[in-house]
Length: 132
Image (cartoon, rainbow, N blue to C red):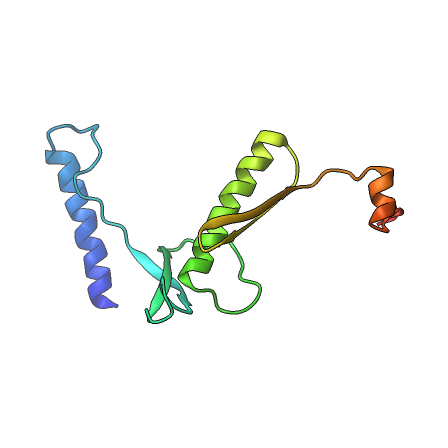
């Protein structure tokens, strides 16, 4: 912990000096250092033989999601992040509830929440869905 604390301190000093002594004060920094902490261990990396694997987040940040069951692997996390991005874009573009599924980083399906017609409601045996 002490070395990690010192590393963050050194990075802050280096960033300050780079900003003060750099050629272009408005330019992006030549060196960017970010301190992160392990958010959760992952079941495995890209493939099952790649252990240990972990998901990291910036210090003090919270995870933007909740794992409801099990211990995800790296590919599971990529699938979730990609599905989230697709759902967010569908929602913004169409203003409809959306869902998406990815399998090994490839889209497997997407759906939109639209009202059923009376015929569809009867076919799906949810004719009284409005009561739900």
